[in-house]
Length: 191
Image (cartoon, rainbow, N blue to C red; front, side, top):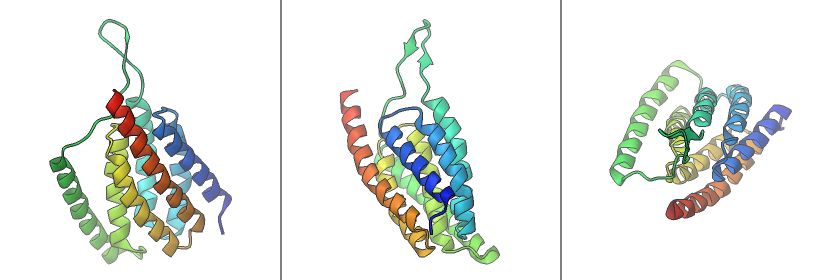
């Protein structure tokens, strides 16, 4: 059964992604609110790394608010916003190797020292989401493609733990990630 806390976290999470697609800076306060609520939801479900991830999301919400601010140029004029850009393939390969390494070590530690549900998958999702959230704050186009993978696995984890409303959220995230990628790619081309 969906709790009021989980339901509120879902609404704020969808608001966050919808505003991020529009490159609206107000996405970040919604992210902070959703993350703080989900902290308890995931901890109660035994998805400890997902719970820890919520603290990171909240911190990144503050960073994102700062990173997406209008800046002042050297002549006192308002400089343009942070622009959407891409990474070269080599940087993506390094990123995924780093995620795999951290997830393996983290998963082993969880297996050895906790009763975590799905320790390796939980860890892989957490480390991939850490990187991808940072990518959103820097407006890297490929973040939306990373979210497609992360949200698919996260939906499976939520389903396995009986968080059915959160499974629905991840299904919505998948659709929003496709929309986000198309929208940002179009904006990148016109910038």
